[in-house]
Length: 395
Image (tube, rainbow, N blue to C red; front, side, top):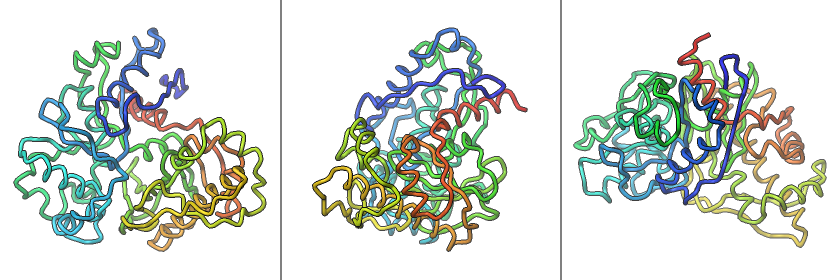
């Protein structure tokens, strides 16, 4: 992205290894960067990384991973009570069985080491770029127990024997320093290139969309993420509150999303079957398309079961039922935010891969009862490019 905000190049790919493998994250960054034109890479002034905010891993001080990461969709119910005690409140985001703190407690229990660091996906990758794994961006660490208002760790988290495993928290958009020699060599980027503290994947997409008052933003990716700006922070199970550009950004992320569709259909088949759907009529199905047991938002229930049957003979009808089920989860999510004090959304902006599906847009518009706009070109990556740009070329 150039200083005017014009997108010059963008690349995407599936993870080269399983999602839980941190080495695959790094390999993905290296391979994608290699696809960018060298003349553009020579001009890069800054980079920033977004990631799934709940995916955490244990690593050594030099960044070497200790085993695989625990993904954002993994609930740890056996750690929920301990997380609530440490966070100081059962309603704190970190107190949930689906929060990062519960996953960190499981990692600490399994490692038996007090010298490991606990880092979220974006923070670990930023650490590799920097050659320094000290830092953690504030938005990525809210569900680990970072208190945005007080700028400290909640409850008794900082008083634990393992508190040295926690990151030094920095604000999104902070310039952390230049690329390390290893990262420069692997990526083919210039020595002056700066590493900027990024954000979560959903926040990055919101930055790309630039929502106006009354707008809600839904990211239709592997999971379903809802975001809207609010006058005040909200609190509740599964609720996230971030501060972006001086405003409170509230929302939640379901375990359901477009990822469940790939359990049944290829991308090409999804396109073909979608064309056969009449979005004005109902499928008559009442599905809950979770990819596995457990939900984070709009209800926080680690035991909630998927409902993927009955499956009709028609694949197009079944796909319609899945899309309607996802739309109902989205509607429940907006209703949950409104109950907690957010303003009702007047319009929804759709981002992510699912925003390329016009039939799903019409299904969602029917079920949500408000206008729905698709903006698939507003990727999380472009949001991070804007953030990195603003850090080194302020308006």
